[in-house]
Length: 527
Image (cartoon, rainbow, N blue to C red; front, side, top):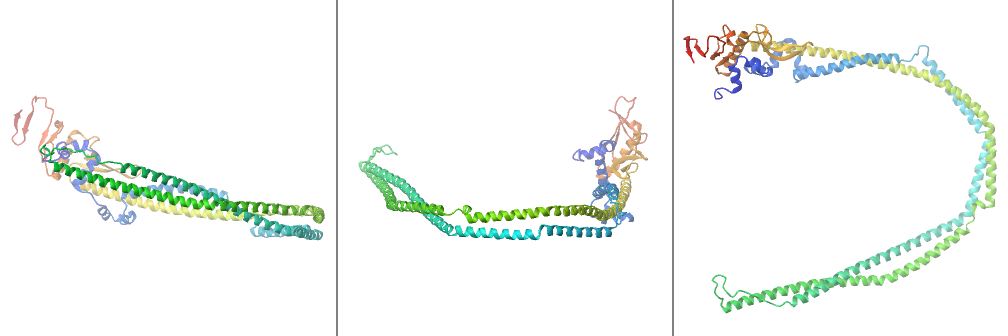
């Protein structure tokens, strides 16, 4: 069978019920489109003038993808349109009441109150900067200047000497630190050189011992007196030649080893001598460095002592009688200033209380003035929301028009496609789309006969004839006909003609054995 037709096609052509009952509707639809050919979007649009604008709307998107975009956008617009009236209502209720307020009058009143506050603050400044207070404050500044002059006179020269001695002490201390670091660095280098001297001296001693060991090695040679090939005894001259060659190789190897050991030993000795010379040079430098350090340490002690003595000679500014007298005079002036300021405080407090009352009235006016700004902003917000609502409504209307065009496209395509497919069949008709409750179309592929769906009320005879009609069309499409097995064929009075042989399986009470009837000769053959 597979050499004639593949298995799936064979099932379609041998069973009248296979296509309509066992094949999934998507595969039925594919088979029909393979037989009849699909209809392009361009064919659909060309067949309906109302769809002329659809290609520009789709913008290379498929019908289904654009429908999804429309559905998503319509849903979003509906949500926004539901929210906007609520927002407008909230904004309207939040508009401040300005019916009994005059904006220009409030601004004039606010300016007048600000002028009053400025005048009151100037009055406070005049009270606080009274004539006697200013005189006393000037005298206090003069006393403070005189105190600074006394301090400079008393401590000026001594402070200069102390500063110079501190710099000298710092310089000497730096020299001590530098010498200490140099001595410590030299001692570290001494220790490093000692380690190198010990290492290279030990290496030279080891090379010397190794040289004597190698030099004391003596030649020994053993060999086979018989020929390795034939097993006979070798001649004496052959044995002597082998011995002489082995001795020469031994002497050459020994000489080369002694030369290498001697070379390594000399290198180690040279390095040990070099590090010894370096260490000896450092040994000669250390005593001078230590002597310089001791001298600098003694110098530092002397300079530090001089600094302490200079600091001890400094006169305490705080205990100087002239300074004490000036500080007492300054305290008295400050007390006079305090007394004068306290006497004016009551007047200042009264003015400040007036300013507080004016500010309270000003705050109320500023709140009333702010209502005009809030109301203006809110009205602009409401206008913006109304414009947004209109724009969304216009967009929604446009989407509705696009959706109508898409559905009109689908309806046109459905009509054209169903007509094209149904034209290929004599009895069977196919319903390729179902009308949904929301007005949309759902794809399907249901065979019908006389307007009755195959799976809903169609009798067995009609089902078989529908199946035979489908097989006739498919046989013509695939270019092959095979035997058709019609089960329960007793219900069909007159099956429609088919290209292929029909094998009708019927219930026959009189027939106890299988009979085969050939229509042309009406001959019965028992089997």
